[in-house]
Length: 189
Image (cartoon, rainbow, N blue to C red; front, side):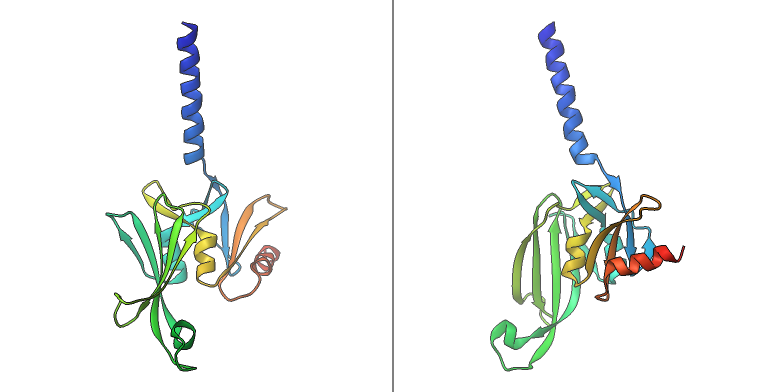
């Protein structure tokens, strides 16, 4: 009987610990260019995650979802410098499509550049590691906001409002200090 109780205790503790590491999420607020936004941001394993649809709307970038591979892809038109990419003539540029693909549960992301006219022609590809892979929470796909923001040349900083005790992920889309924007928004209260 003691062995049975010990086995049950260990099983229950294991289930609780496993569930806690997967589903334990904390709330964090998001500030973009000094404006507090409701993004349903959560913290998963010390990484701030937001729904990918929010990222799409905030950055005005198309997002696609491949059901069969559980992969989310964010796109952005990009100027390609021929000299940097192919050693071509200085100043030759043309349009391309920059994509960032992330698979649910995978710590690997793909940053790829395609020819704008022929999306099957891959011009460049880079594999990147994620601290936290994308996850599905309550039916929505969540992606790491710092990784996505920095891929698209935004700056990210984490701040605490010592008056309210709230924590914020502050993001700047125009190269200014995210902390400066946040301090302005706190001073305006």
